[in-house]
Length: 256
Image 1 (spheres, rainbow, N blue to C red):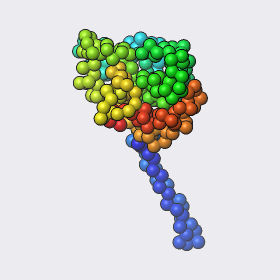
Image 2 (image 1 turned 60 degrees about the horizontal axis):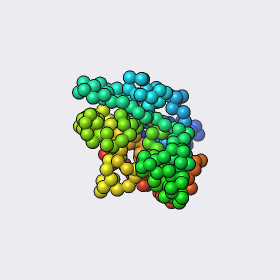
Image 3 (image 1 turned 180 degrees about the vertical axis):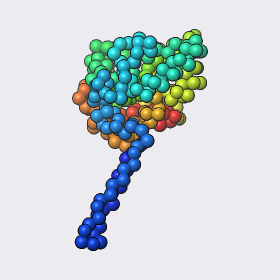
Image 4 (image 1 turned 135 degrees about the vertical axis):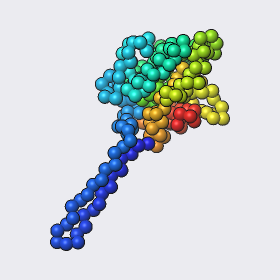
């Protein structure tokens, strides 16, 4: 994590006139420290007005009005061109989502207005709040706990692991596995196992821009608390389910 060190030499009186104070400031290597705030990592800002974010041009997405961190977007553009040269078309289906956006997704699933990918109606089929939250969190984060808040993470081409297991989807996925890291992108949610025992289920579509997200992951590890997850239905289960430890940090080791 980049930090700013401020060294101060205290004024020492060796004559009737004190020496002046000398301040030395070491400049950070990048500006990612401006993103390392609780409000930012919990999505309490508007990507459209954030100075570090850019609107994603229509060439790269099938949605309108979605944003990404400028550096992550610039690198994606390079990856897009390389994939295109290999006959592969990368499409961003989701990018930055702030707290309110994530809340709308979460509460639609919590209330049963939107069924889960398994076909379950969470409101009518799962009465226990903790069990309901766990079922939703197979593929959706609690508001305030999503990496999509950070502007570093994208969903590509399809929200369906099966799509990436055969045909053009497999060609695309294999290309990403072989080449995405050259552009700083890594798959966050790999299959669960010894390397990633907890967290969301596998998502072959979810990729993170690690040159920035690794700093935000480290910041979340150091500062995030489950008690900060509030203001939405089911938030009382966050501490019980250890969302920070099990989900926010439940990523593949290559993404740290």
